[in-house]
Amino acid sequence: MTRTPHPHNHPQPGTVTPAQALQWLATGWQLFMKSPGVWLAQSAVFIVILAALGFVPFIGWAVTPVALPVLSAGMLSGALALERGEALRVGHLFDGLRRHAGNLLMVGGFHLLGTLLAALIAAAIGGSAVLTGMLVGAFAGMGMAAGGMMFGVLVFTVLWSLLMMALWFAPALVMLHDVAPLEAMKLSAQACFRNLLTFVVLAAMLYVLVWVAMLPAGLGMLVLVPVLAGALLEAWQDTFHARPALPAPTSAPARAQDDDAPPVA
Image (cartoon, rainbow, N blue to C red):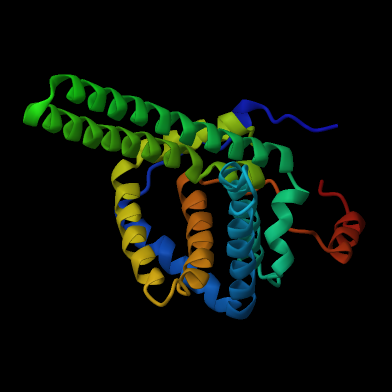
């Protein structure tokens, strides 16, 4: 039977500073350097799986956003293992399928629905502007159509940014703290809004890093993906000040010693 956590036990977002965004990326790099070979292999499998899902006939466009939170949770699990001093394995990538697979897939489903909704709203705005421009005709109509399409792109960008805020911490909260999907997305959005400047700075740095990573035929993404996983783990811990719901294993001798200890008066 699946345990449903009480809402009051959920971690609540705190305040973080923009300077911490750089520290998160530095921590991600440090975790990458602890086991670069395994990270590169895991990152390659991560990218290949998402690319292969994208080529599935008819439904590839829908499967990829659903699978992304599941695989992201696996990358987080690997980063957490390294932080605990454990060995990193390529198999950590599939921890999202082993734990909370249903909830992570639901997060992916909301990701897909949110993207479709944002696209439909933007298309409706742009399409109505084009139709109106055709009715008006001449140069005024062309300007109206172009302006409406640009406004539709702007609306899509804003809605997509809001969706990314809701998704940013959701895999970590589901995987590492057993939070329900919608509640995890709500807490994630709340955390990003509370620390908007910090996450704008982080987004700007990631934008630059993605372009740099794409320059050598995209091979830099093999490094950036695990660095991002470590940065996300550190950001989650700093923002929510919470310990994960996957406690580190306790050794049997330690438990036996505690059992044999005399009671304290």
